[in-house]
Image (tube, rainbow, N blue to C red; front, side, top):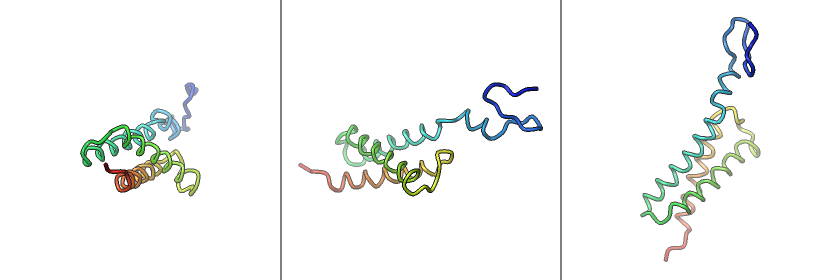
Length: 106
């Protein structure tokens, strides 16, 4: 039986790992985005609700920077794994800590 469009099959008829990867192709990106927003929301709640937009902006930019460091600069992982999500969320935590440490308090 020929493989359907977009599928790769082994000799035994079981789908290869590439088939499973395409079904959840963007799940790691969704996890990273939701994780960065959850960190921003938690930081905003812990600091007295001063502005969710600002914390979301800081967290999002830092998450992209963490992804860039993990994938392009240090090349410790690829987009196929979930290691880069940890780097993104770690960068987000560091940036949020710096944001609340050095922001202007009126």
